[in-house]
Length: 95
Image (tube, rainbow, N blue to C red; front, side, top):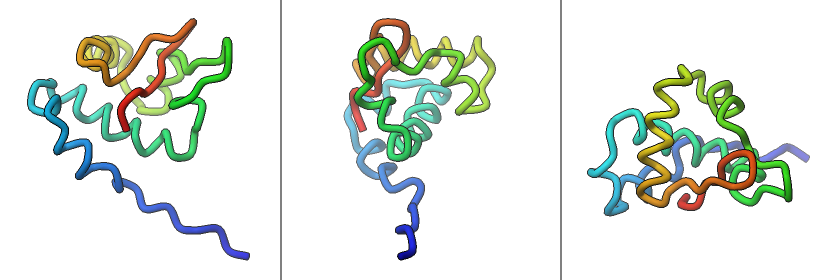
């Protein structure tokens, strides 16, 4: 049986309609959109197991982002309660 085809960007309309969207800088907007797609194939980003949250270094690798730029974006995402610090990493709260 053939695996269902992934439709990347399927969360874009819901994310962009969120009232927090205009308040975010462009780097945080881009990270949020990409993280919603990554969360579809990486469930630990949404619901991490105890002690296995996705670290900032892993997020940099997944998003191909510079650590300083991602730190700035994560600060805004945490401030707006889109991402949540969990143990040793982060969790995507809004998707």
